Length: 232
Image (cartoon, rainbow, N blue to C red; front, side, top):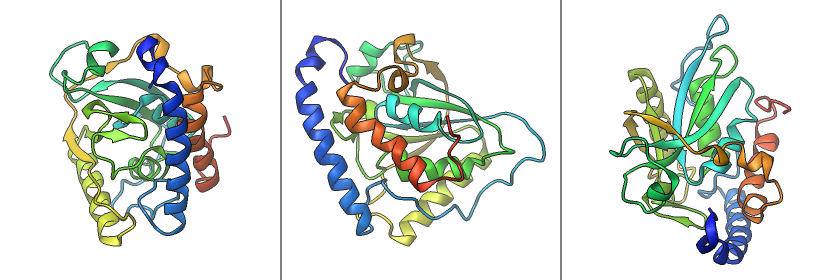
């Protein structure tokens, strides 16, 4: 993620890396590799759709929160997606301290959704299919560090069961060339990120980082999950 002069210097490298990463991922998807660029099988273990309209929350981390937020903002049944921080010990963290990798927090996204329209398992299917690559340890694309790790922060025993069941299902099916490194841990707290991070991909579609790293994720969502595409 490029913020500030230090990251501006690295922008050109990030752009080039983004092109190569997504080209490699698309090629891997065609051969069944761990790319996150193709739809995966639906979870065998999932919650039933709610009978009436209501709200539930899911929190995930999968690299830069700009792209993860952008993906879920386009999912049918998602009411809101907020970029923030989870998984660390520091209360009320800010972007600069999280970026140093010393807080224990991961860039995360809080998803508020209507379970009568989309289930928790369907959200995880999107998360593993197009939002990030769950086989990359402490990194995503050009971003490196524990703050970019892959995590599912469960809020109930049911969410934990669905998450662990889906990971086991994907591993058994051998859909990735490499082992899934996604952590499944209980949510302790979620801290919303600064205002300038919210809706970043929507507000800055011409940012080279967004164009090469995040826009393809949204495009893949529309292509692979037309039934979940919100049309927004």
